[in-house]
Image (cartoon, rainbow, N blue to C red; front, side, top):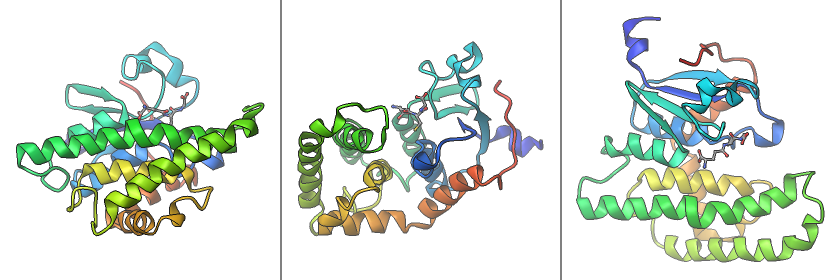
Length: 226
Ligand SMILES: N[C@@H](CCC(=O)N[C@@H](CS)C(=O)NCC(=O)O)C(=O)O
């Protein structure tokens, strides 16, 4: 490893995930933010057993991914990691204090108001273990549609959530990916155009390709957790 490599932030994620999760693992948000901010980074991988070990729990208390190291700083929660990257990047956060707070509102909205509704629906649709889940589906679908219809209204006449692109769009577009197994997003024209616009960004494409390359065995890197 060169000195340059050693100074780079490190994204820690899962070595392998089942097919249905590929392209959805939350390291994607962090990769995307790093690409937008033009920050080179390294990737370290953990497997299902390693992420249960104390060394990893010290980084991510719930044994989940992603986790992140930036110098002496250790972070977990994808939203917090994206915020950390965004706070130092004019591409991802406006300079004005009020606009930064509004960006944060939309970042929380993506993770707190939209993601749970879409995850609940995806869980029922994609989890074989969700016994009796079909009974709940109509209510969960209605809940997801309510959120998406509200977002569709917000996005009418706007390229991005705050007008210009911010870290909030990384989180929101990544959250919308959760229902990629349904035609839900496509049913809302402003939301659909927004989602396509976000996904077409070169940084988004690169982040997605890099995550997928991992599972296709095209990625070679370090796996040691320090
Ligand atoms: N709120 C957390 C959720 C993290 C999360 O659910 N990660 C998933 C992958 S996307 C995971 O690690 N799943 C494996 C597990 O929970 O054991 C975040 O945004 O970082």
